Structure formats: structure tokens, C-alpha cells
Amino acid sequence: MNYNCLIVDDEEDLAKTTAEYFRMFDVTTEYVCNSDACFDFFKNNTADLVLLDINLGDGSGFDVCKKLREDMQLPILFISARQSDDDVLIALSIGGDDYVKKPYSLSILLAKVKVNLNRIRQRANTDTEKVEDKDVKDVEVAQKDFYMDAATMSVVIKGERIALKAKEYALLNCLYEHHDTIVKKEVLFDEVWGDTFFSDSTLNVHIRKLREKIEEDPNKPNFIKTIWGTGYILELS
Image 1 (cartoon, rainbow, N blue to C red):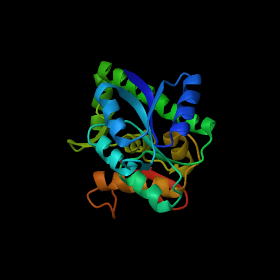
Image 2 (image 1 turned 90 degrees about the horizontal axis):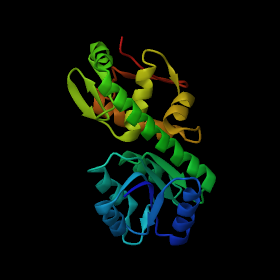
Image 3 (image 1 turned 90 degrees about the vertical axis):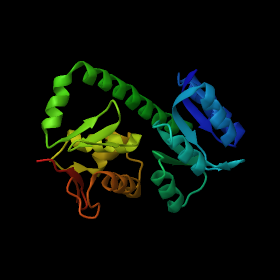
Image 4 (image 1 turned 45 degrees about the vertical axis):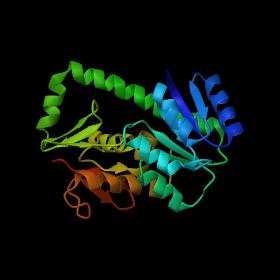
């Protein structure tokens, strides 16, 4: 069975309450309370998105995230009472797409989940359109051998296909859609994360990971340039 959301949290009462709240708003949700149960869930089910606690009774949410990332590109949002910037940076650097600190507001958490689910649906529609319209891709390929491929969630640069994680793809695609113009941080937060409740460190980590993947020298980027105090620009011309 496919669910919109899987919650992995050893605080069973909180996980149950959150799942019940999501279901009230037509977000099909299941919850488990440890890492073994999480992996067992995916043997027989699928989920569009995972809410993942760090402190689990039988292990670490960090380890769960790494293992899930070996096979899946679904959005992973960390939910944790751990407040340090180091925890946030670790969570994002190993493949997490967002970090929500406990105690959280159910309504705000639901809004974040719905934003990600809407992006998944929009991406699926875009994939269909790309398959039906090959000429669109031909135009993209002609543009400095740099184009985004939603069907495989990757970027192709000079014939080399580079796989991206969900948030990496969303971020680079946003810059691509506005290429050769400055994109303000606020616009990136809004279009990629769905709101402005994020610190600069969240964006900086994702930009750094992108540069490590697409730039010959991440310290001297040719594509993604920083416009200090304003935002970023993807230079293709």
C-alpha cells in the first residue's frame, strides 16, 4: 500500500497524534516507533515522504536516513528535540530535506508536508509532459549542454548525468528556471521549501552539496555564483 507519509518516532503518543491529525486532512499516514519497524514497513509498502526522529530506541535516525538514501529519493524531514546547529547540519548533509524542531505545531508541520507532496505531484505531471514533448528537451540540451531531467531527478552537464537528491534537484531546478538572473534567498526559500522559516545555514549546506556535484572546483564555481547579501545566480550564458 502507498501512504503519503510515514512517521518514524519513538514517542508513540506524539507519532499517533500526528498521524491522526494528518489523516483528518486527507494525508494518508502511518507511523512506526523504531528503525527496524521502518525498514519492515518498506518491505510491503511505499511512502511519498518520511518524517524521521533522530533519537530512536533501537538506533539513530541519522543511520536510518543514510540507509533509506541508498535506494530512495523521497523527501525526508527530520523531527527532533535536538536543537543544536550541528545536528541540523548533519541531518541536511546526509540527505535530509528539512529539519523541524520539537515541540512542533501540527498545523505548520502539516503545511510543510503538503508543500512537499504538492511538489511530488507537480514533478510527476512535469515528467509526463517531458515524455510527451521531446522537442522541449532538445531545446534544453542545446543550452550550453546543461539541462534538468525531472524523469531521473538529475542534471546533465556536457553529456554527463549527475544524480541529485530531492531538495538538491528542486533547488537547482529553481535556479535553472531563473538562470542568468539573480535569485534572492527569499525566493529560493519560498519555491524550494515552501516558506521562509529557514536559516541561511540550510540553504548554504544545499548550495555547497550542489557545487560539490556539478562544479569542477567547488571553491571556484563556474555555474552557481554567490551574490553576497542577496542570493545566487546560475550562469549559463
